[in-house]
Amino acid sequence: SQQGEEDPQALSIQEGENATMNCSYKTSINNLQWYRQNSGRGLVHLILIRSNEREKHSGRLRVTLDTSKKSSSLLITASRAADTASYFCATDARGSSNTGKLIFGQGTTLQVKP
Amino acid sequence: DAGVTQSPTHLIKTRGQHVTLRCSPISGHKSVSWYQQVLGQGPQFIFQYYEKEERGRGNFPDRFSARQFPNYSSELNVNALLLGDSALYLCASSSVAGVGQETQYFGPGTRLLVL
Image (cartoon, rainbow over all chains, first blue to last red; front, side):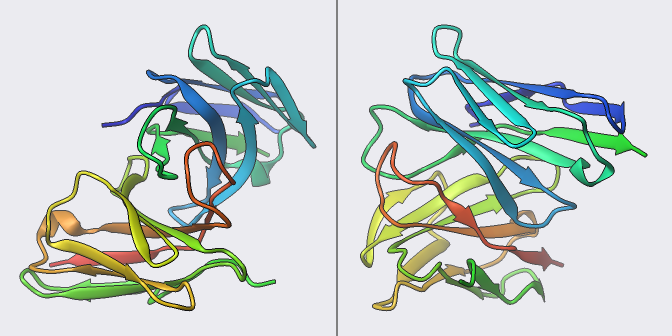
């Protein structure tokens, strides 16, 4: 079963606007990662935020984590047409057996119109 | 450095057949994980291998099996293929295994179509 749930499922914006995607999860985590996927290809790692971190930046990306609400958000600033893709959050559940199993949500499909 | 590589890129099989998918991790990475992604959904964990040993298994039937070789490359085998096995199969590598450890880096995937 999916642990993370992304919201919204689909987002359409104009180039230059900001895009915000949210992710909620169910169990305690060690870290949360965001990935991008273009047209059914492989996943590209964007950013990892650990459970003791609240905010992290990487270029035009800003990720926040609220462990009390079991939620995370991904903000893409000044979006470009090349940002058009599906975005997934993935968690690894704290307390699970010692594996690197990632649990993915169903993703947010972002369309950036030129 | 090369990223994670997978072969083949595309594959068409018929029901009941067997398939073998291959993955080479990033140089220096000892952990390989396999995921299945059905169209419109997020990836689902199938297996993780670390140092040639199975470290985790997802909720998949025994038709799915995998192994890791001394050079840390890996194979995913699926027997008695069903139509529902049609999906993108993703391989991911990381330098270590374990909860809360390193980032997992994904390959381009193998798209399997079962007719």
